[in-house]
Image 1 (tube, rainbow, N blue to C red):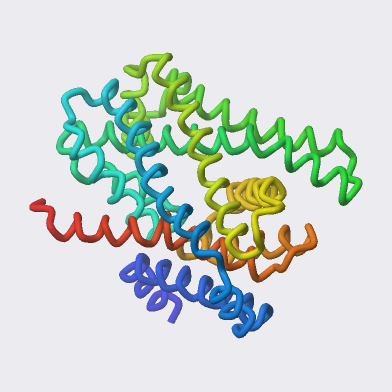
Image 2 (image 1 turned 180 degrees about the vertical axis):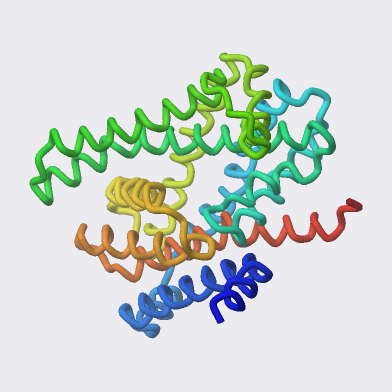
Length: 315
């Protein structure tokens, strides 16, 4: 019996993992929608100021462009002679692949899909490094705001919070350093050696390029938060725009430190939006709607574009 279950799992591992993610996402969203009441969600959507919502939607183009610039800067150093069209297409393929895979791992291979031969392995390593830089920028920007929130509202010992944040940043920086400089040599095991080989390309990156990419990662994070604040303004009015911006930082900082165990991180991000929005004294439905729309604008729509690119690809 156990052998049959194990065999079934091994044969259908990807489908099972994908199904679990879908079920968790639907369950979380159902609980949240049921908690907020569907009528309230529909009502606040019909009363939204579509001027702010439209600006937030248009800013998707800026977000894609920033991601394109980051990826192009990295590829120009690590994988020379890659045309701009391929780089742009790989962005959409990465978003689509990350949406349907556990922990968004598919994003790395999705970005590399259009690259061939040795360039494929280089693109995977560069994509992982780009994600780590992005996470690092989120930690740096969001940590101060999060520490302030915890200190003011929960009176948690500041030294404890600082220790946690510094430890997290230290872990990411250490990982970046190890990967970039190749400090650790892999034992003579095929899997480990192949994993290390993915990151050999990082030695070709110019340090000035890394600085530019990191700055762009910070700008991307702030742009994302600006979109959230615009959507909140569309539902609640723009009088408290800076507060919405602050809430957005807390939401996406929390979303970064919690593992993406659901489909497209749905439910986790919305739960954080509901918590911080209501905690600040605003209608939690506005936080929920803003978070869902942000997902639709920045992930779901680009994923459909990525799917079209994949279907039209000759590979």
